[in-house]
Length: 363
Figure (cartoon, rainbow, N blue to C red):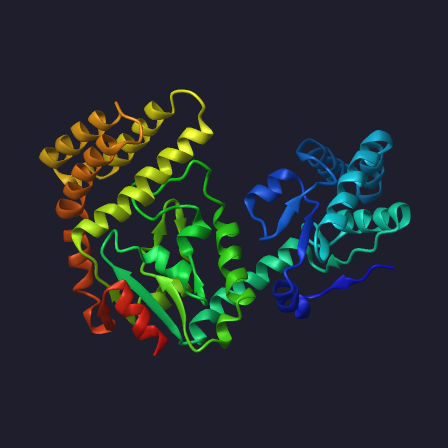
């Protein structure tokens, strides 16, 4: 019979990049999931609710009987097909439900008995995996080898992070670019999923064993998500490599990363009126920082955004956006970062350009 996998083997499970068959209901999956997991539920949300009510009112046997009636015939056949296809098309498939109990065991047995597919299941289910992730996050500060990549807005810190062999891109995991203009079209993950992703990357890349690993200088909030407090406190005491870049280069970085790439995302996602929708996104982002900008700067930027909305990507489009980006950098982002940086000066161990940093870190 297929085996079960316990807590002590979770590290090797992550490092071997197991693929997880999550048989919980969709609502459970949305509340928190593990990287490389696919939600193919045994019971959908309504069925899970009905079985739960039956369990509370009549007990376990009646709940199991109802579940068997709900998942039978063509429904069972369809779900078995999906589970079997997952197992055959993914490396190291592993099953889990909420607590590693009845649902995962049923799916495991059906696959073995009716499809001849042996798949291990997680002992303790998602709950055990979640506790494992929390434990890993709390252990990160015990490995004092973190270097923070800092610098003003537009110094391509995220690009640097993604070019380093041992790094965690928090903004990428949070699906957010980390500013008032950082929202993406696709929603951010849940807080639990975000934390699980950080722990997964830390373990997968063996960062506890590295002489140095890297993260970008972040505020506690990335969009609507919080960096876990133990990790954030560790980041606030770790040394900083400060990247410097000319204003013109920073404007181009912001133009490409926040405007051009976002505009293309909107164009591919919204087939009609994408320019208007993108313009509304920019204006709503601007509204978030109106008080800190002041009315004069706010109105100047707003006027430029309206003007740019009349153009598709072109030289004129780029130039208009460059104008308001420069105002935003000089009147908002730079003063704010310089104020914050004064509190961190004692932690700076390197200052230089991106090229100089690359040469320095290799040494």
